[in-house]
Image 1 (cartoon, protein in one colour):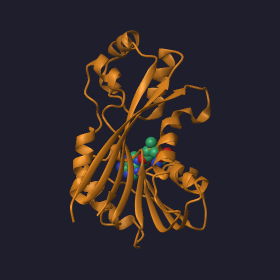
Image 2: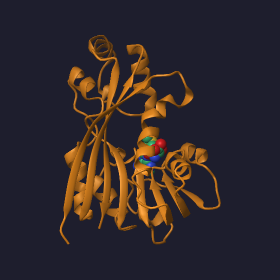
Image 3: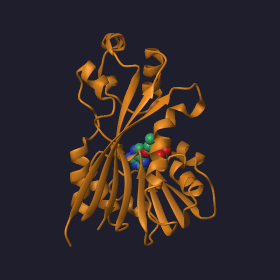
Length: 242
Ligand SMILES: C[S@@+](CC[C@H](N)C(=O)[O-])C[C@H]1O[C@@H](n2cnc3c(N)ncnc32)[C@H](O)[C@@H]1O
């Protein structure tokens, strides 16, 4: 079979105004999960596994987009997040770390129609290992991964390298395990009313910006020199089949 590697880049920039709400910190991830689930071609599946399921954004979107699944397995390394995941007879949550050797052993053995992962695999310390293991579970993978263009101007201003993978690295790793792949890059912006709010968001969102490498003085300077009133996010959407 011939390898199909297509990439479309979206120029659509979503603009979200920062609101002082509880779920603000997940605003971009929530949009990403909705977009990822809307890429699924079928309305019904037997078994689905969600890698880095967190508090269930993917599962909630399957429900709201009326996509049925007989069994849903959610894997995450945070027990706090797993306690927030919706409960249902069809749902099994497992506490496991996709960076650990043999994490495959933690996963219930069954034939999965697809592996899903939204906003989580940027935390893989060995992308090739994690993706290679996930490829053993199913012939279909749908994922969304934050890439190095996230906080681009912030990194340029601070003169630091992004701590997360670039688009090419993720695409190459995917192409190692799947023959038919389709990629789409989406950019998002999150606007803030003040630089203070922006830096508070960075701290609390858990989306590392590399700012931890900076001293207090350097961070202060960065806050004074960062010229934008928004943060940038870059997400690679992946549709992959063996
Ligand atoms: C940004 S959240 C995304 C959660 C959810 N998928 C969503 O779309 O809202 C990233 C999730 O990945 C999980 N995670 C990070 N590193 C992980 C690892 N090594 N193994 C398993 N889960 C991990 C975190 O605990 C967190 O729940």
